[in-house]
Image (cartoon, rainbow, N blue to C red; front, side, top):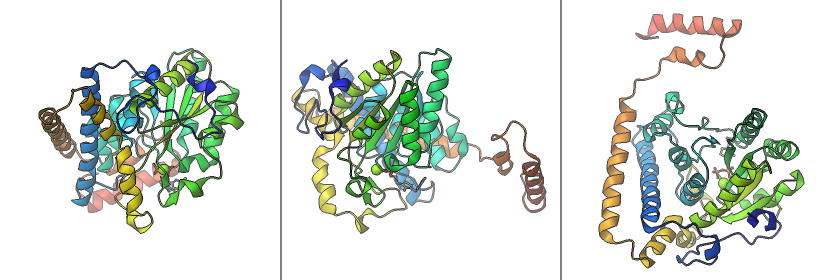
Length: 362
Ligand SMILES: Cc1ncc(C[n+]2csc(CCOP(=O)(O)OP(=O)(O)O)c2C)c(N)n1
Ligand SMILES: [Mg+2]
């Protein structure tokens, strides 16, 4: 404890533990992960990046819908997941494949969702459905955590969102509630420098996004989002604070979106390739590999094994997702209300009649 309270969100000196060359700059803050654990974390990074690439190629082949890549966000999502519990509740935006998987969603369900099948959201994990609405879901996470607090449950909630979301009213409203009511929630902002084609410099005149917490009376802290050790340290403390009744924290994890905004975007139209190339040296996966190499815990043989295991898991997930039964059109009416409103009853009857006339299955 102490890291978050002593942080100055008005400065842009972010918390870093492992630098981009794989050297510990604040060893006292480093998690005591042994080599086996570090290799497992690295394997998850490789695997989830491969799953990400697979969704991009499935979209290109017409086997999946538009998809927002997480490439570059692995330390943010894996590091923050390691610092919380599976019983905590996650409220993701759309660029959150890794956190959803790490918290227990099956990869095939994640694939299914992006294939346009809403049953993909029906996961055996404490993960809410994807929020496409930018900035809306920090409110849901705050409300849910308030309910957990009122019920005296020990769990916390975390909302994940981008730099663009911090310009929305909903985001401020959520933080304001969280401040007044001392709500056990964490606002996890992945500042990947871009909101589609809007660079962070045009998103806000504030020096940091972390400082937006100050007006709501909650702490804000900026962390190197490409450094899994720093993310883990900050997230562990934010989660401990929330569980102890000290309330919410805003974490600004500074990272980079290596890919296009989604498969429907072409970032070359607005973002210089020079910038992307320059950011490659901060890749969170590379940083962890450099550390493993320094510790003699990485070699080509290990890398090949990791790739082979990951390829097999991704292949199996695609097979399962593509083998899942197609949803029935009438299901669009089935899950929003316990009892349909008269207008929706009428629409449902109209649809069923239409399907009976023109299609074989309702
Ligand atoms: C309320 C709302 N406004 C606009 C959009 C269109 N939109 C989709 S993603 C996006 C940018 C989001 O940027 P950021 O919050 O930084 O997240 P990132 O995509 O970088 O992860 C916008 C404007 C939307 N989905 N919802
Ligand atoms: Mg962004």
